Image 1: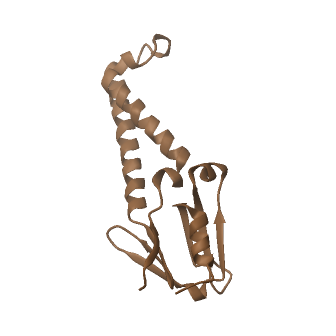
Image 2 (image 1 turned 180 degrees about the vertical axis):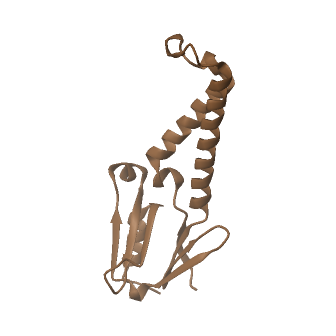
Image 3 (image 1 turned 135 degrees about the vertical axis):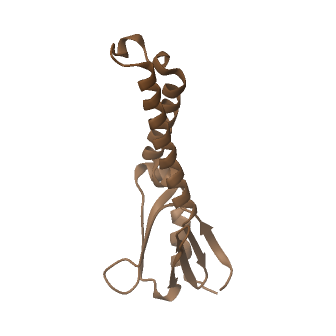
Length: 159
């Protein structure tokens, strides 16, 4: 295999920007509710039949749920990697069991990059690579610097 021109993991915040921010807020809110109990809520939001222990348990459940969600997304993004060299594209996926997809640069017919407004702001995008046939060979979400990826794949000069 020749020299690696590009190597990156999909970014957690770039793949799921709104979900990551909302889950972080849920993590902070759950920890605040767990630590402060009834004191974390304004007096007009407290319900007469709601015990402080129930609020703390609810805060703990929210915290644990958000933490598992973020750790799961983080591990999933770390276990994926896209590498581009002059003659092939290698996509590896998986943490405990690995799956590899190798695509020869000569087989690539179409490279499609899509970016939402938020992805454009974050310099991220979704990459779809087509070879022969109607179905995409590879679809990757949330990669950093998608314009550079497209330029590397479509580059006419390959060593």
